[in-house]
Length: 141
Image (cartoon, rainbow, N blue to C red; front, side, top):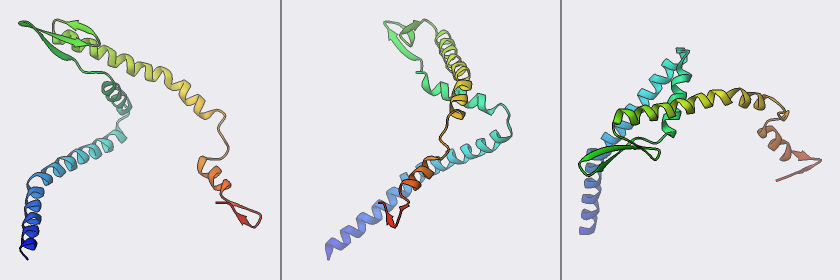
């Protein structure tokens, strides 16, 4: 009987902890989702949104500038290159992000033409359905 009281107390304590620490984390997640959805709706009417998305994608692929303390001085590292000021390192990083974004747009026409070229007349779903369809009176599984 006393064990049931302990389990009940543990359940109430877990509920209190969830309310205290779990709900704020869920709210932050929900707020981020709401911001993302609003941004997507704005992007539908923005003709230049694909540029921003490309730069964001390239920005995620490039490492960040790291601060290194050497003695009394601070240096900044980006892609094995040391810089004396953070502005120089960030400028080099921005240049790298721009290069990746330009490369994406340079390769885009080739990617789109290869995609529209010799494509199968049936989609993958249609081909799979054909394989699983009836042959004669027997169903293949």
